[in-house]
Amino acid sequence: MRSVAAPVTLFATALLGLGATACGGDATSTKSGNVVVFAASSLTEAFGEIGDAFHAAHPDTNVTFNFAGSGDLVTQISEGAPADVFVSADASNMAKVTDAGLNASSPTAVAGNTFEIIVEPGNPRGITGLADLANPDLIVVVCADTVPCGKGAAAVLAKAGVTVSPASLEDKVKGVVTKVTAGEADAGIVFVTDVRAAGTAAAGVEIPAADNVVSNYSAVITKQAPNGAAAADFIEFVASDAGQAILATYGFLAP
Amino acid sequence: MSRAGGRGTRPPAPVIALAAIAVAFFALPLIGLLWRAPWSSAWRYVSDRTALTALRLSMVCSLWATALSVVFGVPLAWILARVQFAGRGAVRALCTLSMVLPPVVGGVALFYALGRRGLVGQWLYDWFGVQLPFTTAGVVVAQTFVAMPFLVITVEAALRQLDGRAEAASRTLGASRWYTFRRVTLPAIRPALVAGAVLAWARALGEFGATITFAGNFPGTTQTMPLAVYIARETNPEQAIILALLLIAISFAVLVGLRDRWFGRGSSPHDAVLA
Image 1 (cartoon, rainbow over the protein chains, first blue to last red):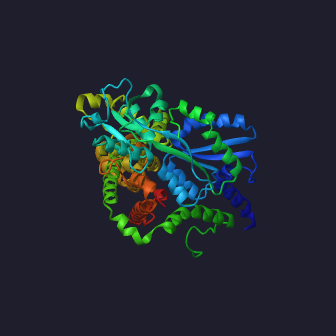
Image 2: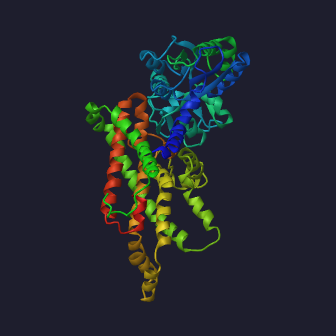
């Protein structure tokens, strides 16, 4: 068996390699090293910029991001993924983490996001508001009610008293964006920040505040945080004026 | 394994050890699912209407995708194996590209080709009012796109290895090309044809990325089992595990069952494809 030891080790190393690099930071809780942030995918663009600004303010600390749907991040954290910070796009996914006792700090509100109707550039179907989405000739897509954007869409439509027959219940908000920018769907309901991120590939139709709902983004230090001190610094930075100014440029509201 | 059986070679220890690790590598994730499965509520999840609707749709779509793969894939494999023409390598690569393409990218590419604003799709829409996305037909298209290459490469390999003398004899005895193809060539490659069709079916059954990107997700229309599993795991991970195990059980039964049914006698080198 001696002869197989090397290849076996090699294989095991290869399997563990991915995990090992992800938790390769130093285990000591000093205000340096690497802070691993698990953040909702709607924060991808804004947090990219916040990460650079944070690093400029804390040169000894690097930030590594893992962007995914909030629900996926909860699963990864409960399965022991080496996150220092978890940022959820809504209260219900944050509650899953705090209910399971996977947090080391109480949630800090970091941003708010509202909803908007996404349409093709130039709004060729002349959609003016939620009531238009009930038109059976329109192809409307929304998120499934299992993900934050779907919960929001359902709440917005209920508030406006509008019933739509969606052609698809997408598993993530970018799925709705893709269907509209590709020209397959006439309209969808997404976060305001998603319309802005789509640039010229899509246009937005505002939903009045009376019908709109706010999704509350919050952050916690995770219980197993390898670098808890730097995690606290990062959350503080996101909540600071500098962090909020960056989030605002991407369309996020103050918490 | 008696010494008289098999090929008479006893595998060296490193081979046994590495093969055992490979088996464990495939078995462990499955065992993980079985370990986490909420067996007490399994029946409730399986008999759930969403699950049954998704399962039925998966079966219908994957069988259609397999049929289309056979109808178009066998002639394609025959051309690739038997006809010399410039650019044959490029055509073969093109027709198997979807095996290596990330399925989500495949789904987006299908938009640009067959969607409402697509290269061909815009004519389908303007002339016939046909829009493939958000329809069951769209699911079949997405599944066929990713599944057909498995049939093509399996059948092409069989055609290349086929001894051409039987076909030549058939032609010499006055049979037409079409008769020879049906009565001599097809029976000779039958094991590979079945193997390729089963591989294509299995790939279609598990298809996720191209389907959700191109066809969307709606129960009863486009939500196949893999999509139902993916959506369920957000709110009900227990149901997701049970649905995933149901999908695995069906695939496993078909793969093992067909292998015994068609390849049990070990009569052809193409056994290897499913072995």
